[in-house]
Image (cartoon, rainbow, N blue to C red; front, side, top):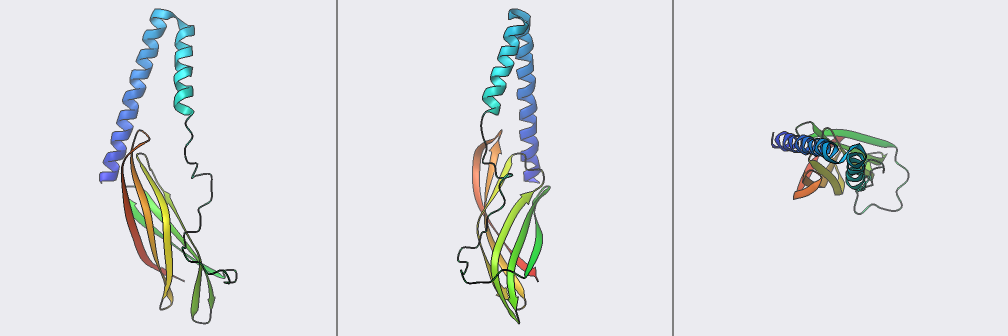
Length: 166
């Protein structure tokens, strides 16, 4: 619930700034003309849109396993689970493993966050996979940034654990 309220605060502030921006452009057009107001609008858009983000949506998720063995053969199985983070945000966990007889050897752990993430940014940091009977037990550490109009205000670290069936 708190995640949704924080997202609504971000949306309200963004709409308020857009309203003020267009009122200022209208006032500028009224007093100095169309050319100067267009120059003002494009200048502010260039400054505001020129910031480059981390580009996490463009890069594939990285393998989060800390101590992955080097001699494990290619994986012959995987498991997927979705975990609710609050609001409409979902953590997607994908584990890749090599299974031979009753031994499961983890090869990779991948995590992504989906949903309406306005005002929030989750970044998976590190994880572990261990065999628990015939299932995989995962532990993930996530960095959760609370953003106000794109600027980090508060940062927390959260852990997510669970069992993945093969």
